[in-house]
Length: 269
Ligand SMILES: Nc1ncnc2c1ncn2[C@@H]1O[C@H](COP(=O)(O)OP(=O)(O)O)[C@@H](O)[C@H]1O
Ligand SMILES: [Mg+2]
Image: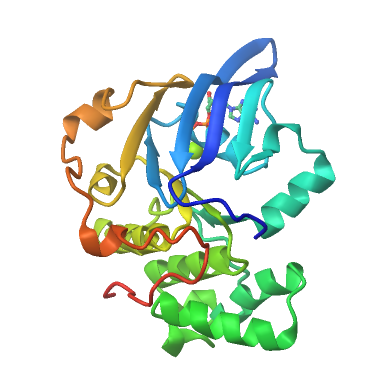
């Protein structure tokens, strides 16, 4: 990471962003004039019905796609004006991804899946071995290091995916429906783990339609037809007014601003 910005500063700034998809004579404004700011170390959930534009918004912030209008700054860099090479570098070194279907390589062990992310980013053997060990410990999977994905439960696979997402010490973790294939207890554990990641100073943005996430995140924003509803408004948000009134001191006190290894506090499995 190249950043030396102070904690509390904006990590993600989205200004007037629109993404339009045109196909077979129809036009969909998947993201429609969205503006928002997300702080360093903030854990934000984007909720909304299927098709409301959550994935499209996350992809734009993560440098997987470019907006038709508007501007996106991540850690002070204008992602929305990156060329292909810059986008690849950004995704490889500065963003960690967690997907609904885990996205692990089936023939590789937990350890090798994490190691691969480090290898792609060009880390040396010694560093890779140490980071891999630390990361698997962090997500509570030291004992499962040599297991392949099919030998792991869904929750364990997603823990490996979180470890992999953190491999290159990203400033930003993007999680698109990370609990979509998990039961609610396991899903809550994954959100608690992401909570710890954010507490260590990593900005986490998760798209979900699980209402229980509200207990784990700092802020919930709701999308509807590509638009971001005013904070605190929206059907899903207002039906679950379990907003965390005061962030828990234990979880939220770190905020060091460094995307380092979060404290080893794996949630019980
Ligand atoms: N690549 C694409 N081409 C055409 N339409 C798309 C594409 N990606 C998304 N859309 C449309 O944009 C809207 C928002 O989709 P998406 O961002 O995937 O929503 P969500 O993640 O909230 O389910 C939907 O109407 C979807 O069909
Ligand atoms: Mg989606």
